[in-house]
Length: 160
Image (cartoon, rainbow, N blue to C red):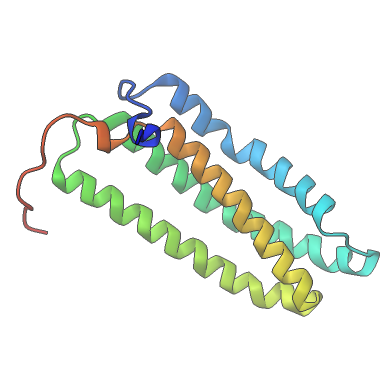
C-alpha cells in the first residue's frame, strides 16, 4: 500500500514557500474563522452582543499561541535537515506545551462562553473551533518537510 503522506514535503530546509505560507496564517485565519462562526452559529442580537466582546478577547489570546505555532513551524522548517536529538526533543516539547496551553485557553473561555450562551451553542462553537484548528494543523503539516523521509537512521537515545 502506498503511503503518500509519509513521502511528502521532501523539499529543502528553509523553503521560502513554507515560510511565506506560515506567515499568512494568522490574518487569513481570523477573517475566515469570524465568517465561519457567523454562518455556522446563528446568534440572536442578545447572544451576539454577549459573544463578540468575549470572542475578541479569546481571539487576542489565541493569536499569541498562533504566533508561537508559526515560530515553532518556522524553526522546524529552517532546521529539519540538521536537527540534533536535543533540538528535535526541544521542538517536540515546545509543540506539546503549545497544545497544552491551547487546551487551557479553551477551558478558560469555556466558562465565559457558558455565561452568555446555551450549552448547545457553546458546544457548536468549540466543535467549529476544533475543526478549524485541525484544518490549519493539516495545512501546516502538509507544507512542512517530514522527518520520516530524512535519510539516516537515528542512533541510540541520548540523555534527556
